[in-house]
Image (tube, rainbow, N blue to C red):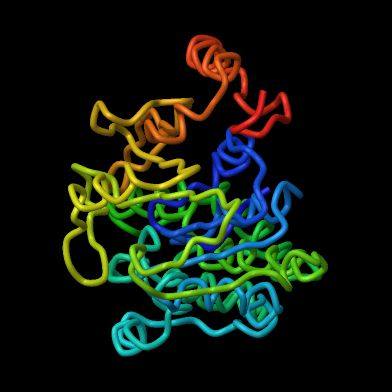
Length: 332
């Protein structure tokens, strides 16, 4: 299961785990929506009756809702977006900016110049059934499959099988191409299309999408606040065209009720309640692991019972979910 939009820093791989660590509430408030992976998992969980989603880039919640309504599918996005078209569209069209950017960073084009034409020919084979362009690169491809997804997988396997003898791109570019395969535009479209399943959920009718500074959001009573802030010390520190003020956020967060924050590390006056190892992409060819942590503030922690605090300690030692026991954070 893939959650949310393709997005740099997405919580797709741990979204379900995050929701398993959070208590139930009337309203789930996601103040730093990003690609919406955690909200997506929350919608499917049945733990919340109402949803408020917010991002300083108001286009992201809007795109999420458009995908749920089925406005972005493989069938209605068969075009290949060139580097020039991407540069022309990326600021005005969030779909193009996300789906056709490298690492979903919304700024740089998805493919290197040395492989762009090859990717265009691959795209033509998948969507138009025309493999002549691939033949110019030395690939003899037989196209089969009833859908773009099936054709893509069929063609990709043939290319992999023929690549060692026939591929005519320099070794360095080949390595780059291999790394980029996980970022194929078709796979991004599939991820967006899966959001259509949410259309059947009654919860969708109770989802409010906003595009404001997190401090301007009015938090309803009996809400759970989830914050996936730009991580300190990473290249994901931008916020609304500027730098994110972590100090101001810490001051604000200490005053909130029932707040939970994703980060690698937080000041000592926040309490860690759970952590998990996550694989992260480091550059084009390398991956690494990082420990994702969930924190709460002293205000929320102090309102928990001693039994709940004991479960937190056990959770950190054994990775048992704090809220698998189906209790409210403010009740025994």
